Image (tube, rainbow, N blue to C red; front, side):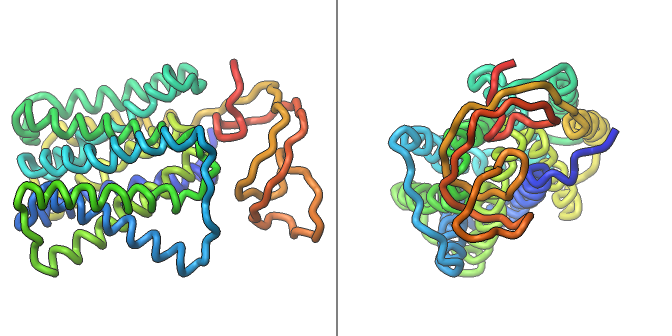
Length: 347
């Protein structure tokens, strides 16, 4: 069975996982001289400032959200931009970076559950089994072992961050066609200063410039670029599938943490096998049936494929990505597909 690694959404979600996973142990290193609130603020400032600079260099067009998309976006910013980073940093301050990285795998599972039962995204037996394998891996990691996860309170803090992160991955689903770099940038621009204000309110002082610079760089890649790529992944493969691919993030974080000195234990290896099986089941899914696309007019980046057959004032070369308002006619056909932004139909 062919693995769907050539899908643009799968590639984006996997790269997002690599960047976010690496950010966890790197943030752990910075915690020696930086308070959790201050570090959370600096990480999101790095995300917001870096992506805003990229958008200015690219001369990206202004983004206009529909009124109905403002509330979900505000909720996502509050959950993951303000509460999430602080909970994660508090957990990191009291547990090994490898344990925190692996425990964060729950974020992908919670994301999938929200997508299935709240947003009614389609899933089948293969996807469910894959998720169960990931959950089994998380259970293995939670039992007493050489991999120290800290007290129940500390585990709760990291798990709470996972729930906050899951809320942000499902909340932007209503505005998936919005520029991903803008969505990630606006979260950083808002959440960064809010966390810094909280830090200063608690009389926390700014760290030395090397720590500030390190936090800004880590935040740009692990929070900014990673989130933008994850939104692209959701756009192409759906929220639950993107969350499953994203669940490999803890492995990259754990491997990097082990390179920094954390001890490798057998539960980590067993959990790694279970989680790898779960991700493989998701990646090798095949979903095909007759479905109908309702008439729709919207604006997003696209190429001319079977779903985008429209005229232009000037010729557009085949395979060229371009962006403009376009209309989809009523269409019924059969082909393999994901529950992406164009396939949100009932089953």
